[in-house]
Each structure stands twice: as structure tokens, then as C-alpha cells.
Length: 160
Image (cartoon, rainbow, N blue to C red; front, top):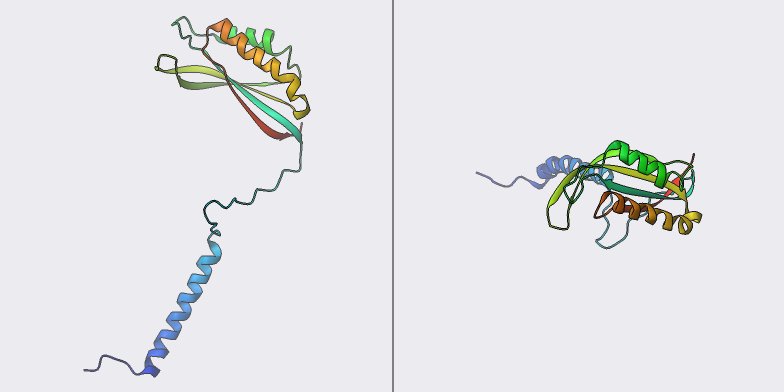
């Protein structure tokens, strides 16, 4: 019994298989995303071409009261918007109902109905409008006995 094939026979069977293996590997490699070494920054996506530089500020208003009092109603919140927010931001704003949770000052996780307010304003007005936004946050906390009103600021390109 002979275990080894003659070289001529071996090459006739191996070459097509090797060619298929090389071709398969090349096709898979072309479809796979390029790997970058750890710590090397990725290329940034292209910048949008529409719109002007704006700041997007989101404020999150909870409705549960830490003292256990009645939750802030839709009517009370709408009145707050009309008196404390609209005068400083008459050009427009967006309010969305939300559900939120947070850990209060006593360590209890509170679940509550809330509102998310979104404001867009030109970056050139950020310094002028910042104190107004802080007054809104302070007024809501005082008026409704809240521990906090979360604020998130981000840069955006906006076109109306």
C-alpha cells in the first residue's frame, strides 16, 4: 500500500483547491471593513453641507414631586412654558412627553412622567441665552419642588 501520491498527481488536485481558497479569502477580505489599531482615531464622517451652526439644548422636566405631593399636571406645565419659556424663546421650541427615571437624593429610583424641551439657537447667541436657560431651570425647580432639571447641550447644523 502506497500512502504518497506522485508529485504530478498531487499538484493536479491541489492547484484548483488552492486557487479557490485564495480567491475566497480575497473576496472576503474585500468585503470586510478595514481594521484600525487600537487608539488610532477613525476618520470623521463628512460634514453636512446644509444649515448653519446652532446649539441644541434639551431640558428634561420631571413631574413627580420629591415631597410626595401631587405630580405636575399638563395644564401646570403648559402654564409654566407660557410664562417662563416662551417669552425668552418666542421663535419656537419643541416639547415632547416622555417617561423617565432617576435616583433621588435619598437613593430611591423614581419613575415619572416628564417633558423634554428642545431649543435651537445660533451659536453666536449662546452666551446671551445661557443665563435665560439657567433661569428656566431654577424657576421650575422652585415652582414645583424639583431636585433637578437636566440639561444637555450639543452642536448642530440647522436649516429652516
